[in-house]
Length: 310
Image (cartoon, rainbow, N blue to C red):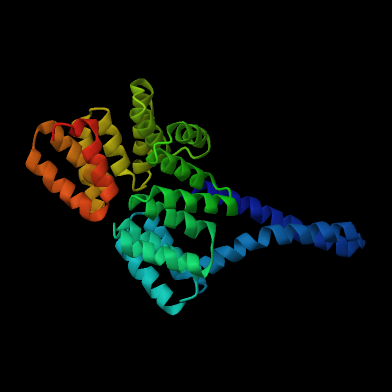
């Protein structure tokens, strides 16, 4: 059960009853100030309830279902649902954003980029620009990705977008800026992905002590996220691999690939573990498979110091 949602709903329900009581009291006493307060409370509270019904029974129901499926890493189902939705509502920018994100989750990056481009062409929303930037980063276009992240952040200063900007700066090897952004992001976006990005920066800067600490934080948070149902097994796998916990990393990578066989982080983890075992045939096979999905991920494996002898 989502405790936060329940508490928020009860709080809003109390406010709604308070607004109605104020209006009743205003009618009985003819005090205009009470009328004003009651109306303000109704205006503030009502949209959240209208959204509740719109999500469940309105025409946007399929879109919201697709978004929930993406969050659960059930991307194939999300693609089918978002496709049906955009076929019916071809000018709905949110539907195209959801479709782009779902296809991206399947590792079909070029196709996802096409949907993201279409969403941005319909309307330059911060969500669409952020999604397109994310896809561009995986397509090894960090300059274009950073431009989209910055445009998204100018529309709405969302902390998740700022965290992604830090990753883009790291891809451009602008490490001081990347570390500064990611350190701040660990206070606002306390996700395993944030700590993983920070650990990668420290590693490239050869600050091994801080890199290990950040990988430990990433692994700890990823464990909690996985236990709550979030699709973060690949982050857990990669963090554990960098901490030389090979058996646990192998199990987590296998779990991630069972859920999504195009998960490039899980494939990269398997490649690194194969390097350590000296199984060069498995390394080559995994890198070829990764290359078909994301050139950046494949290059990242080849450039990893542990792959130096490959």
